[in-house]
Figure 1 (cartoon, rainbow, N blue to C red):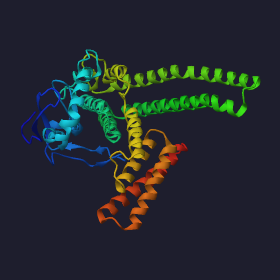
Figure 2 (cartoon, rainbow, N blue to C red):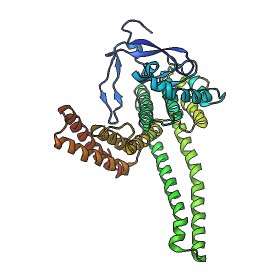
Figure 3 (cartoon, rainbow, N blue to C red):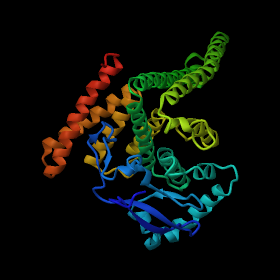
Length: 392
């Protein structure tokens, strides 16, 4: 990389697990510009002042991964100063070391599979996704994993997929945009299949103990219950093949997109894999929490954010709550859960008005609440149109 206008400086940190001394990249302030934010806060229109860095998403440097044992943490002030954190060293470090090393020493484990495929220069987008996955895996090894942080990490994986997809779309023009719309439709079909399967399971549960309490255990009731359960089981058995066929459709669309992509990007494959999607699918066979596309990442982000909201995990009262509620609503809209989107958009609108009308907060907080309220009202209207099939 060029040292002219170099936007990077390095920080040395000793890995708390294996004691390896790593150098991690820090981005200098003002090294790139953005032209805005998407409605789920994804940065848009990023331009580095040094053109040599344009292929790098700043999220590539969000996580710090040890080059020796692949231990991964969010690269923040807390991690940079872990050696000064006596509580961490006294009460948490030993357990983290034991759990991480147990996973790292598994010859065919997910930690080695992910960590050994990081190559930031050759595969910047893919390496950024992998580092977030390692960070998520480490978080879930903790005795009390943060649902909010898990949501934040999955959200950023979704952003990475979107930004990379937008880059490919800009490279391949209208044909890529057409395939992108087809892929989104196929992903929505997968969501509908999940909802269909969930409803069938609800019906199956309904023909259990509660059914017997209401209708008793007469011969006729038992016969009807048995027939209903048999029918539901037959229906459930049809869902799995449909999921596989839907995944096959998405893979075919991806193959077309790959064939249309510029020769110096996605057509190269990923290490020994035909594509990054192929690699992620292999990773998911080792660990079920791996998303293979933006939609899957956003669904996980939505669910973890909602769990954090409902339990108060690291979410402060007031503006923090309405910002989290807005994000849950917008992610619900983007993933096709319009009923949930409506509930949380209403939370934002109600709470935002209370903050604005109460006039108890400082001016910056009130202005932020006003802007968030306006966006929430606009996205709520969009969500209603989409749910009715009228979005344009």
